[in-house]
Amino acid sequence: MSDVISFFLTAAFVDNMPLTLFLGLCTFLALSRRTESALGLGIAMIGVLAVTVPLNHLIYRGLLAPGAWGWAGQPDLDLSYLALIAFIGVIAATVQLVEMLFDRFFPKIHATFGVFLPLLTVQCAILAGSLFMVERNYTLVESTLFGLGSGTGFAVAVVMLSAIRARLAYADLPAGLRGLGIAFILTGLMSLGFAAFAQMAAAP
Amino acid sequence: MTARTSFWTTLSDPLIRQNPVTLQILGICSALAVTTTLATAVTMSASLTVVLTLAAGIISVIRRHIPDTIRLIVQIVIVASLVIIIDQILQAYFAAISRALSVYVGLITTNCLVLGRTETFARHHAPGPSMIDAFGNGLGYSLVLIVIGAIRELFGRGQLFGYNILPLADQGGWFTPLSLLLLAPSAFFLLGGLVWALRSIWVEQAEPPEHTPPLKPRSAK
Image 1 (cartoon, rainbow over the protein chains, first blue to last red):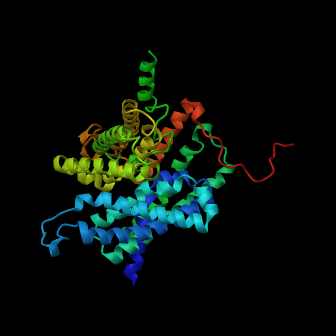
Image 2 (image 1 turned 135 degrees about the vertical axis):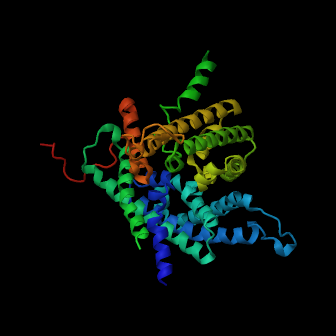
Image 3 (image 1 turned 180 degrees about the vertical axis):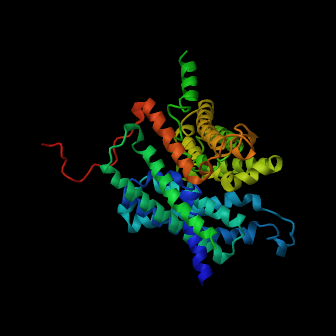
């Protein structure tokens, strides 16, 4: 049980997607202007990652990994180079589904997202979740936990950043630093904070 | 004459003025992750520029035949196929760098820069201008990556391309490596500083304040 929790926490905080692995930064920065849209993005990320990583795990192990076609008399067949296209297909379909659900049940959040929800298809963090799953040889349970955990980590980080950015209203920033510039520096400071989690994980 | 100027502006605008990374917030993910050393930054830049240029060319050629509803999927599949080719080439000939880049080569597929350019430019223009625009954007991206990669490697390790430039303190020199520069936060600080510098020179790029204080403005005496 404690293994499960520590695996989840590692995926969420030590290997935090935007802050330590630089993944999904485009949407991370673009949608953190308002807390509501940041929250929506976070929830969508948890949902999409928790579905796509295990799904891609099944597809990879069942169809693409070297030797997966052994039962059909093709033990040498290695289709793993097709992984990228397969993963993208699964992600695009899932994102489409999420978009339809949001449109139906949360039309307000859907309106705030505007152009960015379809862009989740090309969200580096989501594809990276699946690619890490292959690279690190996760089992099905591990990949589900990894998807949930990294989604949660992303959601926490993006909501935190949006809250900090809302406070910037009281700061008198130089004109050139407004918007993107200060967002980068804030992200850097948060990333420093999250580096502490890595230290905690490294300590016995 | 006009054709010539537009050729040059299409090519050179994305370099600094319309830089995809610092102005349009496109393709940042990989821009930060691979810049710990200059060699990986250069490899990444070259791969991205090649993929972007080819993808823009291909999509622009078939732009009249792609149905609007499934265009995203078509574009992604084209990009993904190109990325697979690049990935295989890197694994075959540059195994060490390919390992250092880890999943980030595969992530060119989802680099917002690629899809952003094919979606906004290549879909509406002839193959020639599309490829020039894509190449220019690729160069603009490369410029940012190489600047940040060079700073991080030079001051983080005292090296460039793996050769010692600054004599290290533990080898009898005077330079103490700033190991913070090899960690994640420094990349954010450097890019933030770069954005600040660019926007101080080109003032029109500065953004308006995002939030206004909810309190009563004090200046209204």
